[in-house]
Length: 573
Image (cartoon, rainbow, N blue to C red):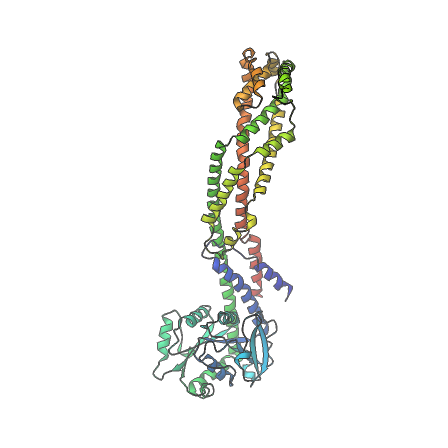
């Protein structure tokens, strides 16, 4: 296979869709059909052969007519299901049928004419499919490959599959039926499909009674949208005994055979071949347009799906906010951390810091001696963060994500288990694990702590000199800030220290607190809560992003569409 063919195959293998619209089945069908038709078209262009296929149902005499056309008993005839278990071809001994043969599921085996074929060597499609090719030396039939296909209404699915494969090569179709079976549903449906593709066709009605008029069948086909002229309909009489040999002697068949040999010779052959290649191109282009329509429908359905996903995400975030209002543990720990940072950065403005610490230590000493309180120790950043993480309750967030995942599967999953999105949504790695949730939360907390430290640092550097003077002129102003913080953030220092600080409160000037501490710290607290909530929402958003990527990864991108269109450029060569 040429490199350009391999490249084309790799492009068409990229064709996919989520399976959210009714057009999805056509996407997968056309994904296979178009490149296969392209390869079949190129093969026929190269070999110049004209393929005539006999198709029909069981018991219609299809193999009998094939034998009559070949002038020998090549294919077994009978009424059992199925009689033809594999395709049989009749071709010139010098024809290059195998060269670049596009049906990879089919293996060709040549035998000499006159060999009696038994069902055991006609082959099947399973595994290595076999098509027996019977060689002949008749130059008048050299451009023609005549194929007896398996029965369309066979109980064996593989028989219908091999017919579908072979019909991509067909240029002319002989639809063989009988007077009582010409309107049978399954064979007729296939004939209607190939007629719709514009293939040159003949209708052969076997076992016809003398009083049966071809117009009766033509009218029945006309009502189904299939037009048949008189020269396209062949009525063959019912023959007993060995119909294969007797059929060639009937005037109806002799006339039809002469017409076929004239049709496939000289200029008429060139005209039929040119018309067949033109139809092949038109079918390929029509399928390409249909594929584009289907992919667009899938794209639009995916956009609607993503909107529904966003609505589910918003609902999950609302539930998380409600749960957050009920949970105070993490909030309290964060507020305690704020207090420590504020005290660390602004304690230099506390004029009575050393006297306060001396008084506090004096009071704590006997309590420490009695073991009622522990030794005072400044907590490091790493220790504070680790303690916050260890005590953080992730169950509300985990419950929110679990609820979100369940809603996606229950409300947004396609119903068809064969749909690509149905399978993708159930991949184990798609759902955030508990460890992944904890890791994402820790990353958000790192960003939160970094923001707090930066905020306090900027506040410490940005105090105007006039405010610093004002603050220094106030008795123990930092004690007032601490009291203000504890009231705002509900705790954060020991009861003993609170009592000591509150004892100094009557000496504070309220204006100094309002100038700086009260307003600034309220603003920090409000933004902290907002950032904390956004951090939790970002974890849920991470889960949503996985679902979004799941859908988008199943859509064909513009670059692939362009490459697919370029692969059709060989049609104009």
